[in-house]
Length: 128
Image 1: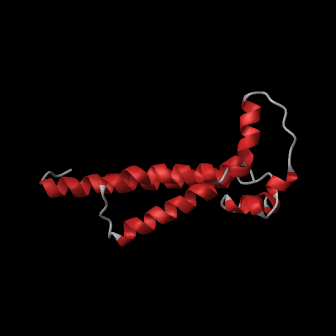
Image 2: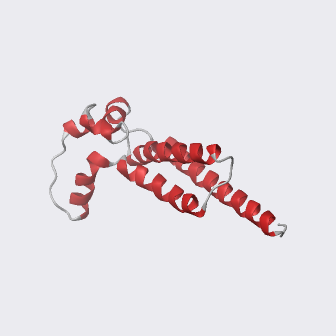
């Protein structure tokens, strides 16, 4: 699976955890949760790249890198949000769907922030 797909899988897991917290709180959240929601989603997305970080860093510094098939098979790479399973099952795919998932996550986070701003403005007595 290509990087956008891996990032989308990791970010969607972080997104689902945060949405569950938001729903449990009945749509009322704190500043701390609003701050850590996108941070945790991005960190989960980057965690999904786990086995590919060595390759990215070596490419960035123009160092030689031998491709390791072990980093892309099911097993230890699955600790990084099923990285090995996704690479063995869907090689070279996932860019369009991954991008669509990332855009959906971004748009829904914007909607949550707007709903929270609206709720807080109602509390202080101002209408939108």
